[in-house]
Length: 122
Image 1: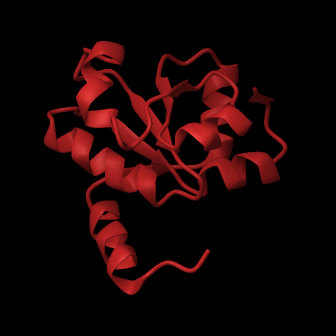
Image 2 (image 1 turned 90 degrees about the vertical axis):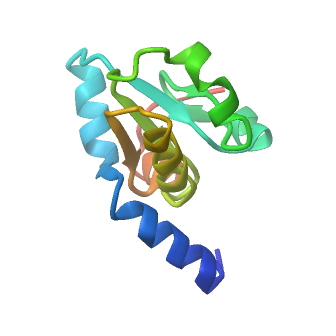
Image 3 (image 1 turned 180 degrees about the vertical axis):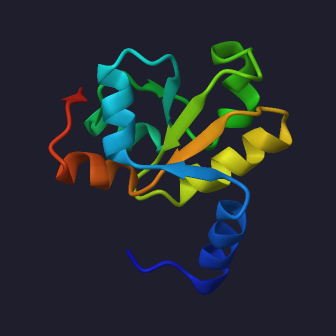
């Protein structure tokens, strides 16, 4: 995908503040039974086409509005992903501004998850 320079600058700025994790780390933690909430921030049509196993959907457009219902504990670990890891970094930055203290963005997002052959749901 061809992203605009201003968008990429915004993402890079957010990534300075938001910790990243890898798909391999997320999957290993799922398999180990670690407690965290995996949140897909993609658009509704992207979600409907398939998602990472165990994810919940809070699209970036409604994330800030609805996150407190889905994840009321500001200390709960939230792992966000999107298509490639850009929107999830922006979303993570916004959640940190809202007071969430344990937010990660999954580098590579859905694309990296599927390339790695990790479990998906529909």
